[in-house]
Image (cartoon, rainbow, N blue to C red):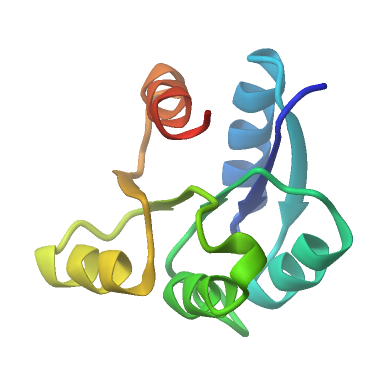
Length: 121
């Protein structure tokens, strides 16, 4: 059975590109337009990994990660930040919240897949 990866990003074009890249590599994908929708879909689906943007309406990526890490079922789920933000302070904040990794947009599909293969076992 294919691993399920959720992508949470308020940009439809980024969601489409991530989704296409992951589906081509054999993963199943669940899409969310913001952090609130990601939480709802996470609770409704079996998800193995999350790829999330930082800057989203309603619930940003760091708050989303904090919410997820507060749920013991997702304590060890890999979470990758995929964002335009590259400041060290933001990366440290993401890591402190529980992010597994950080990729700066724009991303190369092979870069995303390499990170996913590394953290998703």
